[in-house]
Image (tube, rainbow, N blue to C red; front, side, top):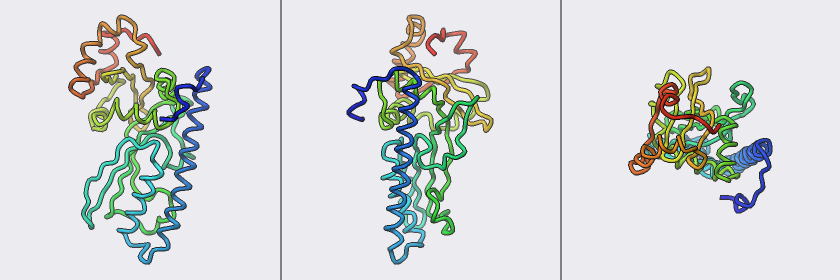
Length: 252
């Protein structure tokens, strides 16, 4: 966590949005610089176009370049011919953000999975920052991240990433949330999170309402469930209509 996080004075949502954009911009610039340096180093190697070398290069770029936004690194296979590693990260850090997705004019930040597989590396795309499959798992609205920043008093990218990882990982990265056809609510041990879908059918986390801002009715309805979820390291997903009938939604 950034040492200035706790002492930083954030005046309003617009101030928090500016900080968020600055954090994402710095992380993106750092990733591009690391990609350039690592690629330059690997080009000097005798077999720089060999798939094994390219695989190692990409993993080194991600290990260093996604440091502040990495949610999870999953090594699926270590064998020489079938090596495969997934990198799950927050934001457009390792993606060309010229075509940033929006919802009703609001910027969306993806939690995405980059699948680095030695079998599928294309030698024709070595120059590109990302030559592998990058798939958005879900999006967080800018509003949701601003709410995280202000309600948890955490204003650096690493801290935001840690909150998402601790609250939603590894339970959220499954087909279950993608199977929801209507708007739905994710309930964790420490928050409830209203969600919808984009035009591409990928889930969008609209806002983030932690336990510290719940009113008495929220607490009476959800406390027992959240204690159970914490004890069992689980989440629950409810349709929005069912949740609204059962729990009064107050803080936005």
